[in-house]
Length: 114
Image 1 (cartoon, helix red, strand yellow):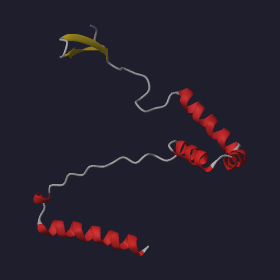
Image 2: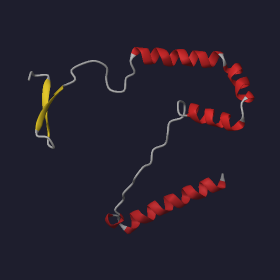
Image 3: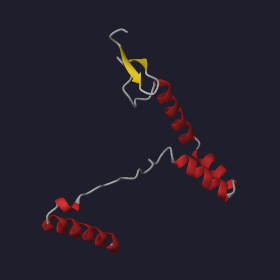
Image 4: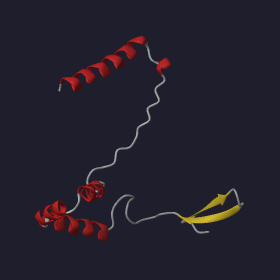
């Protein structure tokens, strides 16, 4: 095993697996050049054919149109992720709880007045 490898023990089989340590290349999440070029090409293609796309959309059935829009939306609108907030209210003072409740009520009032 060289300095760029690390061992990993598979506890269920008692075997040692060797994994290479990443020492260079793109950073995680950075698209490769082909991906960036493809996205740019698709963007230009869509921008230059919007009128044709809109006309084609009008020719298909509403159910098909909705299905297509749903599929396309995932590429332009980020999906929402659920957020889990565990708050231990026993650690807050009565004043802190009152501030939180008042803030929530004020936000609800603001939303309802708009």
